[in-house]
Length: 89
Image (tube, rainbow, N blue to C red):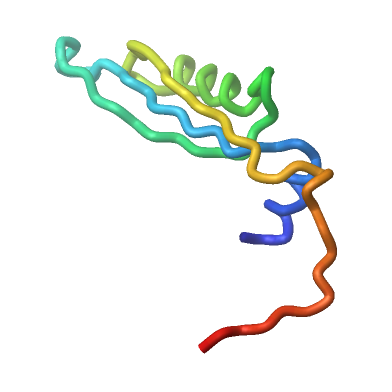
């Protein structure tokens, strides 16, 4: 995990995973799926909705549906400074 990701988690960001179901441009009766992950802020999810707008404006496959989940991996109250560590084996 990078330093930037830790800073984002301390600011309240969590990992958002979305599965996009879309119609194939040439075969409209066929559904395909695409998985997207990004750190985002709940409950507004600005990055997710920005990506959905990008999809609708720039990509040919029309969206059928989107399922997503969000998980905060770290809260600011959970952070603690560790002065040392040890390795086993």
